[in-house]
Image (cartoon, rainbow, N blue to C red; front, side, top):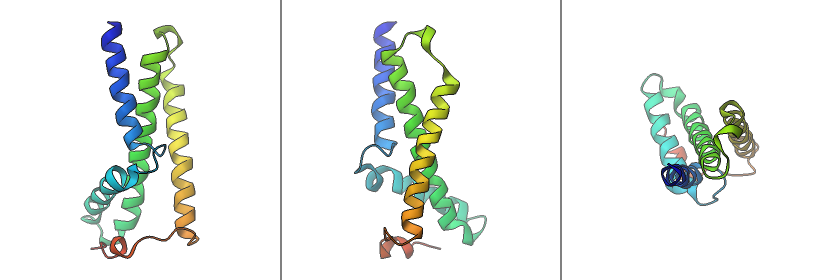
Length: 123
């Protein structure tokens, strides 16, 4: 059972790292495409929802990554007695939310610019 638990934890940790804001290069390959697809799907309901939907998709992919890291690390490093699912979820949710708010604020105040090809994607 320990081998399975360590393999599951390693897989969750690895996939979570790819989706999380902890890897600086992941946005271009993972989070941004997920966010754009999510924004495009939301824009089917209302064409003005593309940008908010993209931000929501970006946030959700970061939250998913942080929560996966939490669960993977817990599988690998903690025993079953020390697990607290609620705490782990809140920490992952809070960290990803804080990161997304910071990035959205940097874009909003034009400290970070959105590339032209992304602004042209709006349907």
